[in-house]
Image 1: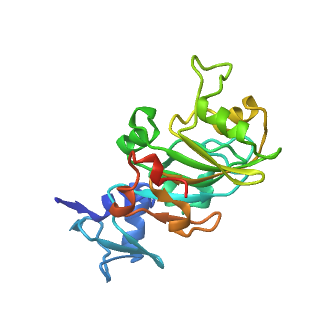
Image 2: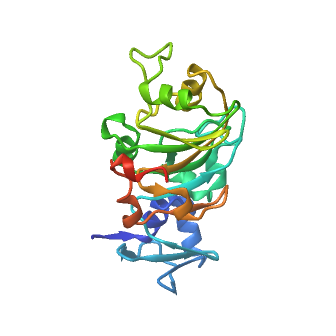
Length: 245
């Protein structure tokens, strides 16, 4: 990989404008691989490059891939209107990197949310053509019945959809709880499908995307983590029989 000047490296990692990054470097606030550097023109190979800015250590990443356990009452928008945006749960420099949610969860829906600054990755994960399944735990207002499960599996007609939408998989996990797997990702889909099937969604949590599960990540609500290559490899179309357990 070609060498890049330190001010450009800091700017690419979201630490601010080029001018601000230069001032940080000249003030001795930046170290590279453990050595303080005060010349912003000095260039470095970004492979395995570790930065320390103030007291925080950061590994250089060309792109970032993040998993967040989204709490309720946060909006998946860069310009939220009624609630705080999910980006407020992340370090400030991620906003400078133009990180955005991969798809959306409603403000009152919790669970696994991906965020990235990699455009092709965002498109691939968001597109229904790639058939990456999403697994949800839904709490229902009325008791779950065999008829409800059957209806969700056979498909329900929503007023703004040309064809019925069906769950890929759906099973009862409690008197008022189901695990449901979808791959379309339509607006308010789980809630609307439950309503069309004669019940009502009281609470909703996304527990997995592909084979990447919230339980394996071990994140409490509001916590986030970088995803490594092994975890990213789980975000692919899979055998639906392997999901939802």
